[in-house]
Image 1 (tube, rainbow, N blue to C red):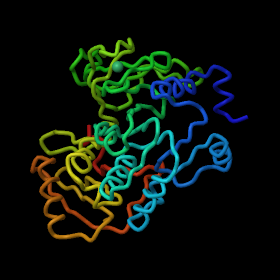
Image 2 (image 1 turned 120 degrees about the horizontal axis):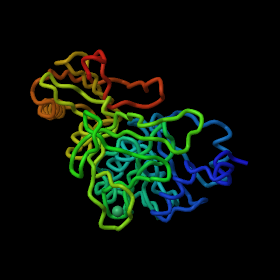
Image 3 (image 1 turned 90 degrees about the vertical axis):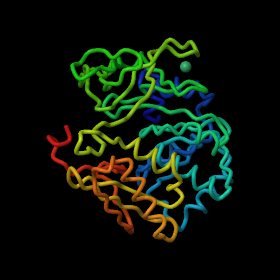
Length: 329
Ligand SMILES: [Zn+2]
C-alpha cells in the first residue's frame, strides 16, 4: 500500500492536511492532476502510484525554449481536473500559454505553492478556474495554510501547528503588522519544533469574511533568507523580484529561466536563459526595471546564459546571495 494511503488510514494529520485544503477546491482522490515541479526525476515507486491515481508530473527543468510551446499545447489537450506545484513554474506556463493563445483549462482548480507570488488573479485569467495559494514548510511538513475561495487571505491549519507572526523581539504582531513566521509542530514526536523560525515574512490579518475561524495571514513573503540586501538596508525578497518580472511586466515570455546573484553589497548579476532572440531594447528595459527595483544603489550586470543550474536541493533559486551571513542579517 502506498505510504500516503497508509498515513491517512493511521490518522496522520500531515497527510490529512492536504485532503482538508483540497476539499476547499472540490478536489478528490483520483482526480486527473498535473504536478509541476522543479525536480528532475520521480522514483519508480512514485511513478506507479501516480499512474494509479491519475497523476501526471512535469519538471520545469525539462522545459526549454524549443519545447515550451509544444508542452503548453500538450497540456491544453490533456483532460485535467487540477494543476498544482511551484508558483513560479505555474506562472511561467500561464504566461506562455496566454501569450500564444493556448487554452489550458483544468476543470477544478490550480494549487500554487512555494514562492507565493501575488498572482492569483493572473493565474485565474490564464487557466479559467479558481486558484489557491498554499503555504507549506519542509521542516514541519504538510500544508500549513491556504486561501479560501475568492480571497487572498491564508487560513492557518491549527490542527497541524501553532503559527505565530512575531516582531524582532518575539512579540505577537497585531493585524496589519509585518513580522516573521514561527511555528510549533503539533505532530512530530521525534524531532520537536517549538517556535521554529521559518525565516518567512508575513503580515497578520483580520478575521476573514468567509467566516472560517482559522487564524489569518494577510500577506506572506516566503524565505526572508532569499533576498537581495541593498546598501541602505532594504531587503528585496524573491517574491518581489518575481512580481516585477512576471506579474507587473511580461518578462516571462522572454525568459526560460532566470536568477539574480548578489555578489557584493552593491553588485548583482542577473542571468537569464532567453526564450526569444535578445534585443538591445529588452536589455535596456530589463536593466532599468531592475535598477528601479533595487533603489538605484546596486550595479546590475545582465548576462544571457545557456543554462542555470538548480541548487543542491534540486530547486531553481530566483535569488542567490553570495554575501556572508553576517552581511545578510
Ligand atoms: Zn476566508
